Length: 146
Image 1 (cartoon, rainbow, N blue to C red):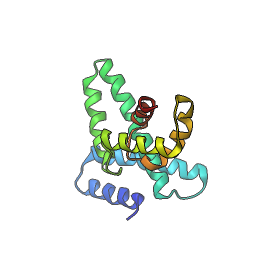
Image 2 (cartoon, helix red, strand yellow; image 1 turned 120 degrees about the horizontal axis):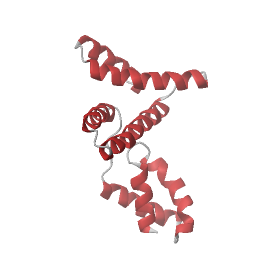
Image 3 (cartoon, rainbow, N blue to C red; image 1 turned 120 degrees about the vertical axis):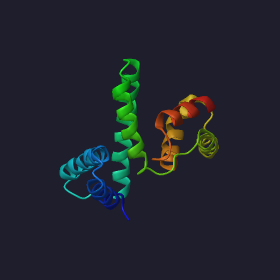
Image 4 (cartoon, rainbow, N blue to C red; image 1 turned 135 degrees about the vertical axis):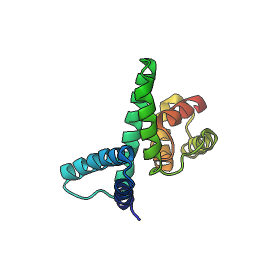
């Protein structure tokens, strides 16, 4: 089952169970996907839907931090619940140790020795962890290992 089909099925289930919060989150994601499909005049495949989901989670995490800094716990709790719903559609996230091992392996494969080689490392590394690790964490670990 594709991600789009899964989103549709979960949206129907949320309608039947009258779970308005889950329904609104899924509708927001589907609207983002539909906007991109309209812009590109084609249906998105699973990898592109995954990119949209990652972007939505990242936006919410950034907003979550801002709300926490501003002392808006009510909005932060709501965003945290939205992130939990969206995370169900993303692949299992890698732990920091797993990402670190992949980073070290990629540095050896590329033959990187200094921070000047960071672009080569990131280019080779990102397809390996796409959708399964936070880009900030990956960037931080690459900098530490170079």
